Amino acid sequence: MASEREYRVFCRTGDCRVTGISQYRWHKPWRFATSPEGAQNAIIRRICQQAEHIRQQILADLKSEDENDRIMMAQGMSFDLLYDEDTRTVELVELNPFGVRSPCGSCLFQWIRDREVLYDENEKETVEFRVSY
Image 1 (tube, rainbow, N blue to C red):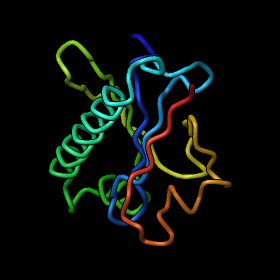
Image 2: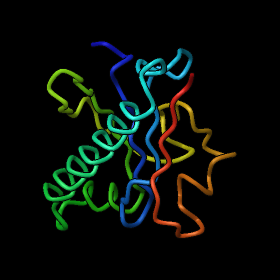
Image 3: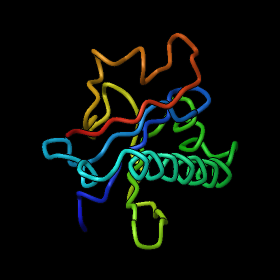
């Protein structure tokens, strides 16, 4: 799979709302770093829209009577998406636990330093999208 086309989506504890999205290949420039700003913004908007759609699909599949599903809702989740720029679609790659104790990496975020953003401690209700140039 092409990691330069992947993004990690962070959904905070409790309500599993999306709080951050990062390019997966954090150590290299973003695939669209040299694209015009308008094109970059359109790609970011599309990925954010599709991430929210995938999040809603995941939540719709969870069962309140299933203990593992209840734990996932309580602890939050992160998931990886693959963005296809030709079709402007995304697909779910994998689902992971959320938080500083998660075995998955935080890409361009840092669990401790960016806690306020990832957990949305100030209730800004925004999504921070991070890429490297």
